[in-house]
Length: 171
Image (tube, rainbow, N blue to C red; front, side, top):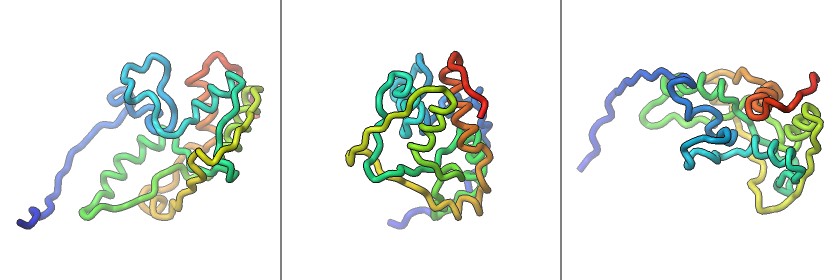
């Protein structure tokens, strides 16, 4: 029996942190202490965990094939992109690598956190961690444009939001 023909479906959503608090830091930073949805507590990329390990004097575990390069995506860009992604959706699916426009390594962002906070960034290498995953964002940039939040500004904001008592240096 053949599948039904695709049809257009339009659903308008208002995407704000106030209406959808689960979007805050989802996928990139651990949720703040007291978050009530346990399944949501530890999303994918551990940037806030790196800060917590630095606060505890523990090493940050990285893949041994260094540098460990990724494309961190700030929540402001995440939320700004969702409506554009929905407008770009097609049948069959439009596939787009999605990440921040800045390519940066775990080692570099942890060293930056160390410069901002005065904490030490120690690293422990292992082959048991996910290796670098830099993205080809050519198609994303064509469809959505470049992200707006610079990785350094995103880290500064993350530290202020998660550790407001921690003094930050002006760099």
